[in-house]
Amino acid sequence: MQKPNERLAGQTCIITGANSGIGEAVAHAIGMEGANVVVNYRSRPEEAEEIAHNISQHSKCGDAIAIRCDVSNENEVLAMFKKTIDHFGTVDICIPNAGLQKDAPLHEMSLKDWQYVIDVNLTGQFLCAREAIREFIRRGMRPEISKSLGKIIHMSSVHEIIPWAGHANYAASKGAIVMLMESICQEYAPMKVRCNSIAPGAIKTKINTEAWESQESLNKLMKLIPYKRIGVPEDIGSTAAWLASDESEYINGTTIFVDGGMTCYPGFTQNG
Ligand code: NAD
Image (cartoon, rainbow, N blue to C red; front, side):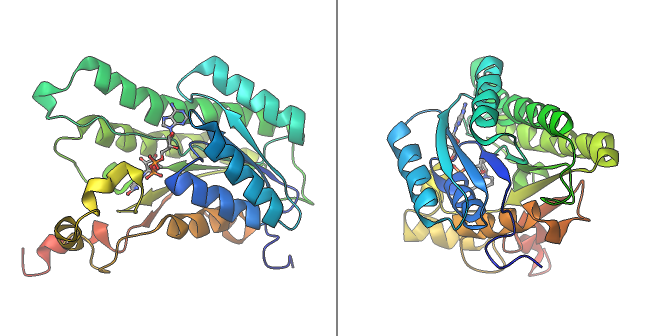
């Protein structure tokens, strides 16, 4: 049995959008399990370098580097995988996490804002998953390292099932992640690839500042969360580390909701 904090020793993981919020916490949690970590960023390299430095300092047996790449750009994604493989030898775990919102009522939503969100949140996840699978197949099984050929963990959202007025582009991108993830599972599980999603509820990050910055907005948010606390990025980090490890080996093609019960329709608590 592996010792605690070494569940991912000898493995390499790319986490996109890892210079803030959930991606940062996931990178840290994966690094603390002994994996080599690629901290992907699109802007603000100093944050990514500092996170990578911090992981390298604290990891028992892994290392971390920062790599710039816009996940919606195919050539940049190819280059990120090439740099990772040149540096660490292979990729065992891919966590496409980068995401953003461009909110507007649907009748006012520009095609540009629709496309931008789909390009980053959906196409970016497709490009990263495709490159990961290509590398898993090229490298082949290493039973001494993991029982799976490779692991993909898509960062989805409760909005893969909860419709979201005023955010149709975002909700559509996350709804599509379900079919992307399940189709990948169906196609590559026979080769021992595991592909799952994490669907966070409300997690305190930059993406949703207006939902928690005032007491009033926080009180409003609590009506949506049966567990009565906002999530923190570490809630997602610990889930991702476990889902990437062999402890969850038989979990494939599913979404793990990490939402304090948000998807249990709390609006119906008082009989609807
Ligand atoms: P965040 O804004 O802190 O992080 C998003 C990261 O993605 C940032 O580092 C940003 O620079 C990066 N990014 C954006 N476009 C990129 C691109 N083209 N290429 C590379 N990186 C890019 O927000 P977060 O809350 O940490 O969000 C992370 C993921 O979690 C997103 O996919 C988001 O949809 C999802 N999520 C968040 C919440 C929440 O409540 N915070 C809930 C559900 C799902």
